[in-house]
Length: 377
Image 1 (cartoon, rainbow, N blue to C red):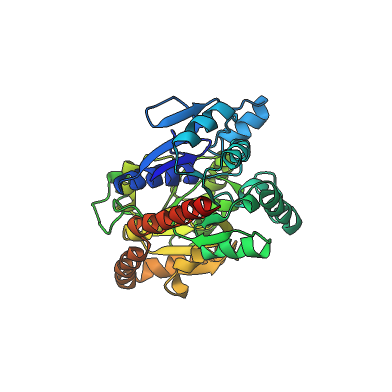
Image 2 (image 1 turned 60 degrees about the vertical axis):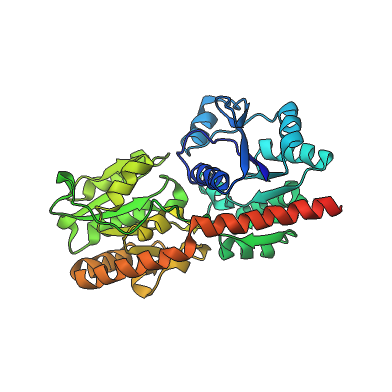
């Protein structure tokens, strides 16, 4: 198949959606498909480049601090891409996606969408993430301006598919994991000097309101083993200064840094435990990659997060937002190393249910359905 992916940002792998899209494009090519992308950035042989939107400095900082850029829609680019494509797959309900969809509809090109942007990703940034009314409004806007014009939507988890059903989305919903790349596998390597003699607790994710890294910082401070703990927050985002201030209470200096994928894999293989504190999450690839690499996860049990589905028992769950409960879970895993080692292997085996290979096969089936239906129409 000839597939066009529409995503505002593709070049810089500094947010979950872009990372998933880049891995997705590569895997589709490895399956024998031809893939081109419409995105901001430099032109390339398999890329239709569009210009980046510019905003006043405050708004610009807010968007880029989340690891995102927004694109200016370009009709000629979509006409050129659509003339080549068998199917166009939209990754985001952004202005680029909304305008591009209009042109694809007019040209009669098969098209599908993915639901990667949870309303809470927006509303927490605006300090309204816990308002059900505001989140429902965003779900409804997404539905009416974009998603209900598709017949097929890729949902990375059953949790988000259920949210779309509740909000009257009419498309056929395909629950397909984003898939764990084969480069994430069970392995241990000797700890580097800065990690030696400490119990290293890792969380990967943007420093943003819905991710709740503050709960991990507070839990580490309350732990019976606080002096042994090394907290590592892999990522970046608008709350970095706040979290550095909070972390001053920790006996050991916190590590906060954005790591390139190869370096992050090394760190995964040296850490002792993975914690995922997010209140809202569509799937959490970072957590999946962590337990595939041999780390037991401890996950916030939030109704707005799909990540609790990965917990193999209650020892990997804690009530969302409860720092004391998280501290007790961390202490439990520190004090029972044999149980932790057993569960590391069980989680690594569990990860084999979510292979990228299987996800690509399911996504290709969705594309074929969309193409066949358009042909009949």
